[in-house]
Image (cartoon, rainbow, N blue to C red; front, side, top):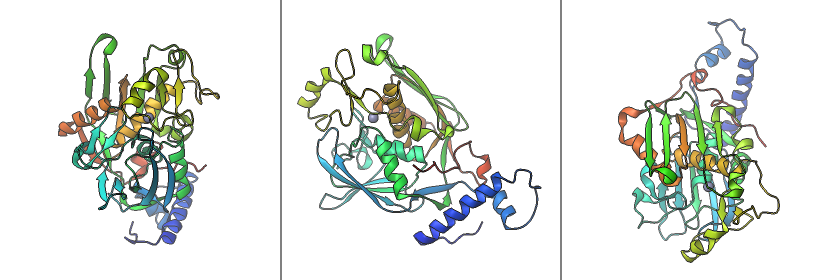
Length: 358
Ligand SMILES: [Zn+2]
């Protein structure tokens, strides 16, 4: 379908409205005779699944979980095929850091990126919760201006990022959305016995994740240890986004002595002592710990630069292993291909709809 290649935001808004209306018409016209003519019929036959960006600029101020530093983060709409690009605007010369598997430079406590993956270059830390929100809402293109080196932790989940993105509005762009489809199983593993951990990607027409944790800790063991989530369910916002990061008081002194978790508190994390959760309000989900690991994995995997079409299964994985898995995938060109859907009806269920507004 021919469309203007550049449009004003007002036109974008108009287009989105029209498109939603036409989705509605299609849904309500299942018994419409195929092969008909006219404008609706041609739209029905060839509507591609499009990339998405923000409708307007939005901003958040907070502190970094590890650095404890105050940071202002500005999310800006970006052109098709930009991907998610972070920009350190506090430096004398702004430095751009595209989020891709090769730019990941540190995965010990979070996912940190630097230009070319060089740990000596300017960095942006703790990108995973924002990346997870982008993947959850299907946002492909974004420029993220940062006034410090760490994404604000906000409430420790991705719910605040989801709120920010939806408040700014999400628009469709004039370019096909590109997925990375996994064609054969790829697996990474480490250790054995009690230290065993692994993560695997397998072909799947959609994106689903199954994660199992085992912390050998009474407060964590008392919650759900395994969860499966299918992105096609459209329930990212309600079922995953509110799960917060967590930390153990026994690790705090050591981490703080290394300059880590300087911004952490019960306002932005679940804090667990030797036997129980210390937050006065308890947990947001019965299985909040493992759900946060799913939230992290969604963000870590989106760093590949495209939404994956795959089934991800993991046991005690984390940022490092998730990145190893992406690198193992990219190391084998026969294990994946980039695909678009010229007819969005051929896309996996749930991928064509915009997430419902708050
Ligand atoms: Zn996390």
